[in-house]
Length: 337
Image (tube, rainbow, N blue to C red; front, side):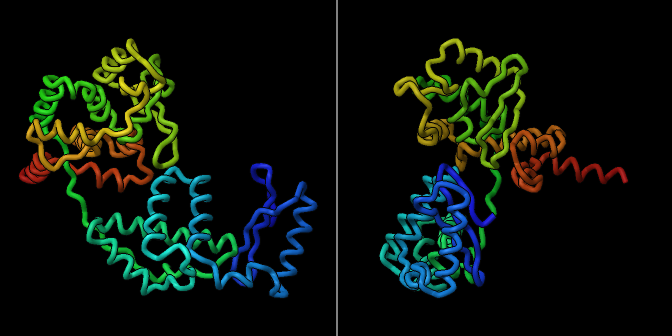
């Protein structure tokens, strides 16, 4: 339909000559009035008198950023990231720069500007956000084309999958147990290793997500947007029971000082790794470790995929590389032929 209602507001949404016009209709209370308003807008557009046509050439970056952040806040979980991206857009291009002056050549220079302090994958995220911002501007009828259609993404270096060896795991837990300032990491790391959950999923885990009777964790807010259930192992169950006996908030892993969830987990974790002499390891690699161990034990990739919450099994294969010893065993099988 070309008109619709959302959050008590009526909107029109149609295309003319390949340009989409999408905007809230002021002072409209019902479907009939919305259709009338839409007809007026279309008529004005055909005559070339409507403000979109007059102002499109002069649309500035700040207008596009404002629309994009409204869209992001309503539709994306990465709103905070988009806020940061937009700050950089404004710092580099200038908030009063006209969109038509942000040319492919200037965007290529923007990529060069970003590269010294950022990985190629991060630069690509900025370019994706900028492209989406232009698309939102086009959808709202304040601009006509997206200059990023001509922009190629940077080649991303393949990240070497890092997983925790058994010896490293022993060294890490030795540090976590022997140093009081790291004790709170013990159940968190156990959860990561026993579930393969992402750091954000662990930080946001609530008691309401845990079914003790049927022994599973149900995650409702995930990166893929799809809910998933993860079985609870005996080792993790023991930790959860201890935590529940002393719970002080709705969150499973609660900061005893703030009485709410932890906002940061990386700094203390990095410090503990250093004491354990474990190098080139991130919190996210605990997830890699869980995936690698499951595949090493012969668990079907489809099952691992479901536990990790990957939309595509190819992602599971990338995260869960077989360990060198298992590769060697696979090759040795050929000796029998």
